[in-house]
Image (cartoon, rainbow, N blue to C red; front, side, top):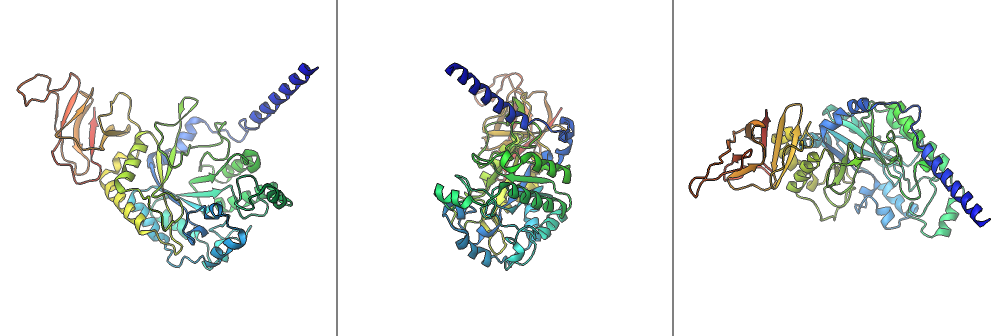
Length: 459
């Protein structure tokens, strides 16, 4: 009898698992082919570099965008930031100009972060910018400013909401109350279905009131809230209906499907190699910060240097990915001077070297990576780019490159780099190489750029 009950239990568990799988099977509306997807995403694949912007009430305390969570601030105590939010120096044209100067091709703005505050004039909540001293929709002029600079538009939308009365509390969110009993009591009267409708209503506003939206970054699923709690399939169906060409990230907890996401989004780390799913390379984008936080953090002191950030961009593209680099504007609506300095530094490098980034990807395996270098490759233009992370003395050896390229030049000034393949030994000052290898003859002094790049015009 015990064996029979155990068998029935195992069968029931199997049926539950199968139901879970079937719940995420390809729906009838998800008919896009692989080729259609590649065409839809072509602009993003070529762009390679974008700006993330985290801005909300958390800019007022200036202690990290999760300040409410980390410091267990109640709704009542957090209200003071709502009453003080007045970005009087906000000029989105300046933001867009900074992004363009840095070489960024798209941007993503936090329309609503985890705190639940909306930067636009939503009809479905009073917890919004128009009810603060700001008194206006902050998204519309931003979208217009970035579009005017030729920069693609992306929206971030938090699935988590620490403020909404129908968001069901769990062990992780919101930050208060902390105890289980208090949470259970606070959950009485909350209705996750109503919260799902709220999200759909707000996303409908965002995707119908601001013209073509190129990207949507939903954030995020975790143990306690997944595709069932968000109604992720229904949400994605709505998104695709309203904006058929939009690119959507991978945080709706639909990762077991081939239709529930467009890009993988590793955060705050550099993948060791091109990301794969079931052995196949997939589009990916790493989102990174200048410092250790996303929102404006006045006292943050772990800011990355300009060379580090340029190296991060190069390495990302060398592995077939995109870099989404974050800025956290101040409570008065300006970019921090530390952010401006880094954007200007990256822009100076990109002015001379952007063609080693735009439209580029990982180099074919037939090109062996030289020591202390990263390679990027543009198949359409038949160009290979060697990024020299450490400037060598006089010579750079390219193993197996003989016959693969016809011309070499420094990218910063277009000056010729001579190359040869000497294999015969001479005197003690004669440098030689192996058959099939090439020596690039470099100047002793490093070019006056953060990271020099050699452009090879391929055969």
